[in-house]
Length: 399
Ligand code: AMP
Image (cartoon, protein in one colour):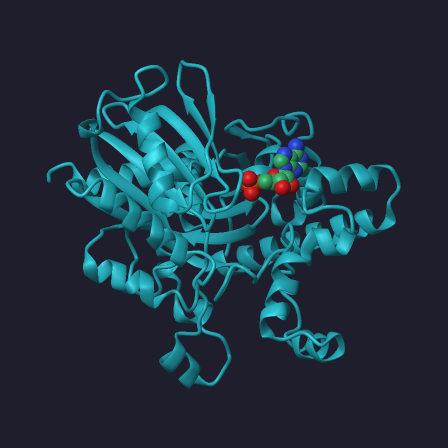
């Protein structure tokens, strides 16, 4: 069976096609600037040349049509006809408290995704738009939703409750949810394989360090805690997000800078983090370069970044009462050699010792800890799309 994986953003559609007989990748692609002038499709069929198609498209349904045409194109397609696609897996950011697992999409599931618009206004509406566009174009195959929040639903109340009046939880479902769950799930399972231990017996700390960044503490196959909260704004310092701050700063700056709620939301989500602190860029490569050439703000920004991650490592080791391995993943975690080094240095009291030579590696599945390090340090490239494809296949193969 072949599976189409779709990740729909407000103006983009990312996709993959996989043959689930051996999980092999047949094509990947990105349709960018949907609904904005300059729509571009970059389609990369495995074993053939990549193609770029420029064609302005007004909405996601028209966008999906162009993607499906590319998939069956006789020259650069990857399948013979749309009948080859047995099911479609959709990334959905927020499933609220309703979904601890992936699920086949029916009207009720769509209703829940809609109910979560309030708490995920940037993500769930385009996710649902993508689902409805695909359902319209492929009405005869099952569609599956894979939620970023699902894996974290095993968190206990002491990790997911905020110390706010209980009514705001009851009434508005204000609690910690956590995100990047599919990535934490994938890399923690790979880590258990690398440890050679049953997943249900491992203590794992996963560090998904990308433009958005989060960590998770996983014990006996369950998430004990994760750094993102009610929204992806909580936790680590990110490309443009502040991460943890004193909430009083929000009211203070709203008053001082005359910001309304939406402007404040934008300020802490889009203008803060490494970009705001360094004044250089949200991209850590640029910040590293600036720091190396003496830019003091960039140097401070990096120290704040490391300090926050190291604090969470200590926090999570305490909550797990030990740790078998740290797992670095996503753009920064997989490629940031200096960043891994700076995060892990001087943590030998916690049993964490990084080997600088082994650590001189990018984008490969490898153990970079010293022989005598009590805690293994893995670099594991994440593969959220593979998890979506596998879940979709498992839920639909007998239908
Ligand atoms: P992601 O969100 O997982 O796609 O990660 C994207 C981020 O990875 C970029 O914004 C960069 O900050 C970061 N990144 C990519 N390559 C490197 C590298 N060689 N060193 C440090 N950071 C990197």
